[in-house]
Image 1 (tube, rainbow, N blue to C red):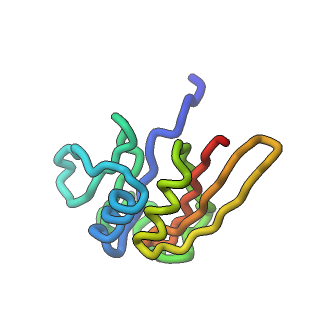
Image 2 (cartoon, rainbow, N blue to C red):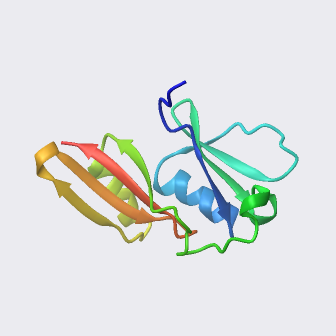
Length: 129
């Protein structure tokens, strides 16, 4: 069986509400349905897919409990999303006072925007020109 696409990623949050607000209010994902897993958390959707899952440190996978939040994200370098409106994304980041970095890759007509979430996870957003 071949892998086809990224399903989701999960973040251990120091402040789950602030992290949810960042992905929802700043990046534009939608807070949506999450089954009762027996512990608190949020699932954030891009379209009909829950692509970002949030949970507290106590409910992380047993192998990951005790890792340190913040700029030290262990071996995770960044997570990337595909997007369709870089102007609106940048305006939203500015509105919320979020620092970001842009990169243009002319050879493949790609406009990239990089930003850190409240837990130090680098989020890359790719926009085709």
